Length: 237
Image (cartoon, rainbow, N blue to C red; front, side):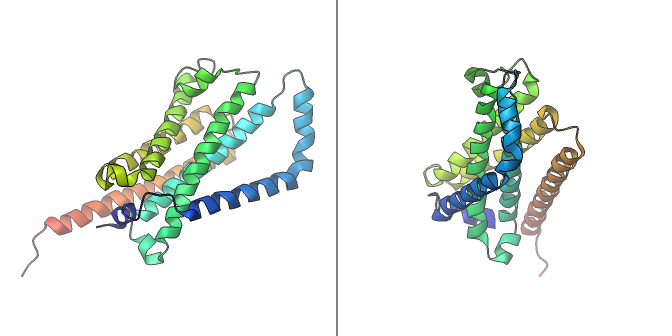
């Protein structure tokens, strides 16, 4: 039994550490916002008073970047949990808590990213276009739709963890693998739809994080193949 399966049998109820972590992150976020308020407040005020306010657009971009960061780190930790590394570090439960907490935070940030666009005067989407994939015809519907599907898949994966005991570990594992598809769609969405994608920092942000996940996933697959071959190869007497 690998660590990924062992973790799946530790219980489906969200551990208290998940909510403590969310509260701590929220408090840190509020502190940073208050600390930086003098820097960004004048621009926000100017944007609100301008003929074409861009406040909602800027906030939507910020929450999108944070959501992707949470999605990446959650995927990264999930891969760590599926290898022997977590057991060697003796931090399986801690990593699991962070893994689930980041999923919750990422989905919240993604929801904020979409809902904030309703206030943007340039795109001006309605709630139906925010919720239904490929319906936002005013801006790159294919790539935006992939981002929307990514969040729905991510939500399904998270829910499967919360009801893990009811659906069984086998089905839970199968659903959990969809998390890689959610990450892939989220990555493509960020690269193709983000207005910052042409900048140097965004280039490295997306490609480095994507490369790390690809490396770890390849390592995980090769490790599983190696272990399978060891089990099926007869041992010499």
